[in-house]
Length: 489
Image 1: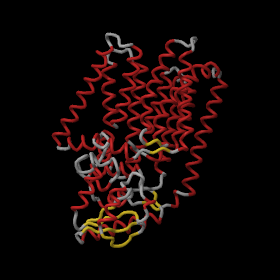
Image 2: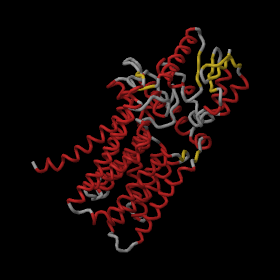
Image 3: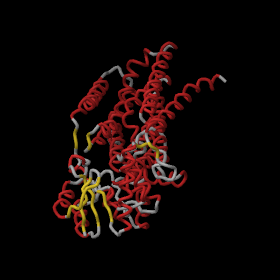
Image 4: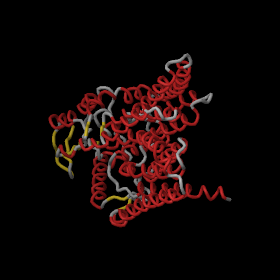
């Protein structure tokens, strides 16, 4: 009976996290951003389109396969997609708590540290389900598995599977994950006689998994499209979409501080060997995962890298200071009060947002792919008018293509798949993708192209070359909302 009581606060803690995530993601107003583009790709798969061949995705496919499975089980709508996001974020926070516990951090402190990270992640939760977050989830599983099993017999075999899972969710993150694991093991072992044998086990396991996946792609007929989009796009994506926001300097300085502080701690002589080993692992792994920030050095991608520095910093501070101070029942009560305050603040914030903003929004009906999602009256009218216009033109034998970040908003309800024209961003089109798309446009007939009248309205990843080609080679027919209509007859 006593054991059940000790588990109750943890159960309540995770229930609170789940409910908060459910409210935070479900009460997000509809805007065509990253989570709508990801939803569009999974929705197209559910409608029978073949990933990479019938539409352009530049990320390895595990996130999309799992999403498609959920759509078949629960229904293909944005409500289910949001539930997918809730599950990913919830499992990510559960794993974070488990990592703290596996690092011998007291349970009430692990609760506090997990709650603090939830605040740091708050601005990004509305992105809902995302391949980046799923890749990070697998990375956290890998960290936890290392801490608990690094000396076990099947450790390197399991790590090979985890490298595949991360890689097959997002290829670049998979490379950074593998690099971090192997680099740490090379430093620890100093390339002893077993080092290469262990790495061979990892590599062989990964190779078997990836070759099996590639054979399936080849049989289905989308292998070469997969290679072109996932790897042929890398250089164009990196050269076209490099951004840096100066306001991010404070986060970057924080990362540099944690890095310098960790190195300093490793030089101290009175630190236990096992603690130094954990610090070394977390430090090397964090350095490898720092590459997730590039080329899009924005708050979201910095936060992806910061997750691992946060674990590292918390572990060091906890071992050197907090673990020795927070020992009494009074300290447990203080942590409990802080956590209650954090969640009270989060729920009050969500409640305020709901009753002052979200409750006044329109809702999509049950048969709509965007079922139950809130949208402003103005945007709802625009969506209805735009989809009616596209449908009318379709009945007249004219194809309408919207070359903007809003394209998914209109094509999903109409169940229209325009392939890479629905996501026509630089670096999202495969090798020499921009030139290939311009060539496609030059050969298309009975097609209207809608582009933003003002270039300032364009998403930063939209190709200037494609826009310039339309402006210079197609005939302007009129305007519709913020768009100019160009015709290729």
